[in-house]
Image (cartoon, rainbow, N blue to C red; front, side, top):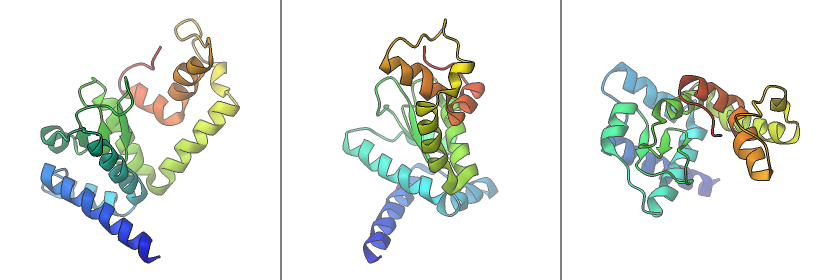
Length: 175
């Protein structure tokens, strides 16, 4: 239990330092609310985001303070997965890809669903992989499923609930 508390405290301090350095939470009521939500209801997502942030920084990525201050998300300049922006909790990797509104939906989802968000995302990935319900409405002409990589990139990935929601806000799924 002590080890968990120490690791959690270190991750919390790590997130706090970056939040302070970038002025992640704006002054006033909105910033206060976002900070409280990230530190309580959405804590599992914030911790996962802190681990993701540490990993990305260790690989040479850099935080963009102006983006972070403006968007309320710790923005990393480069993606971690080639060709994709990735958001975990309040951390977005890949800010110059033209998908910022899409990724902001994921930050909102994490804050809205709190501790349920990551398990819901994981469960939907499993269901969409094993029981491809999305084949009932998938546009096969625009995004053909012609192999295992396409099954995941054009099928499972864009049809999970959290991605469909974000694609309605900005952009189209990969083809």
